[in-house]
Image 1: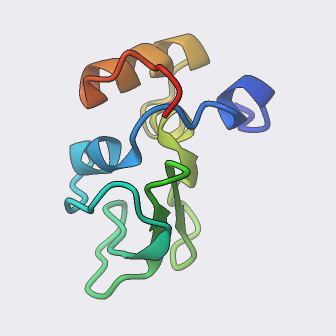
Image 2: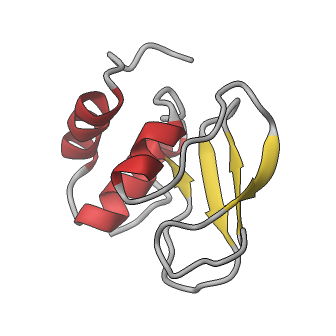
Length: 101
């Protein structure tokens, strides 16, 4: 599965926080730039990841297998589903209709 898909790369239209919370992440204030965040994809005691709620993206630099990217890319990797299915899943989790943020 390739995460180089241009449509998935440009799909930062879903808020990232509800998606990360779905996988065990903590709440984070929306509308903020880059900041440290505890990665929900491995046993993080201290924040080893970064989140940007303005751009709707997440990155973990500590563990090799952690997903990175926007909401749709994370769902695609974690659930092994297609782009269309990931968009529908992002809508359901976030309560957003997918309108640009």
